[in-house]
Image (cartoon, rainbow, N blue to C red; front, top):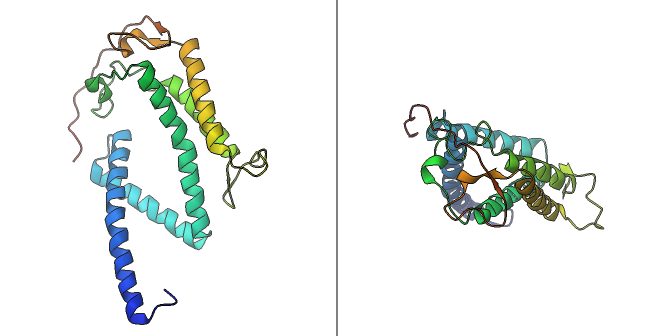
Length: 216
């Protein structure tokens, strides 16, 4: 921008704005859709507006109160550290279930109802959560994204960032231990049963509640 003549800088601004607008809209729509599935009372428009406003505040704070590039780097690092162990847990779950899922039961929460094969304890798979939360926290303790995220154990590997490896390894080991120590009920698995892990007997919770209309 500084090296360009004024007329060319204006064109660059237009191109940057249109490019950012196109990618931003698709990202915002996807994020709003995900957020509305976690909070079913919000439709897609409301969820997208909320996420958009929250992102705008983060951008302002990151630009005015902190170094913007450092803030973005730290934010992306935190997202990767926190979401990757959950992906590992989901992958292990997929493997031990032999890829079998009951599609209707997966939508119970989004529909505003309760029960079904995957309701577990109050709608939460506590085995997965008990493995994910400590792994994400432990990963952040090893992370090094100065000046916003500087974990106390960031230098244990001689300056090499091992935060992602720590979070992934912790999630995999913890979830596997929990699956053996507290087997999931037999009905969450397919006709062939679980793969490599035990299962326990249990009554499947009945799906109850009125069907909520899909969010617009």
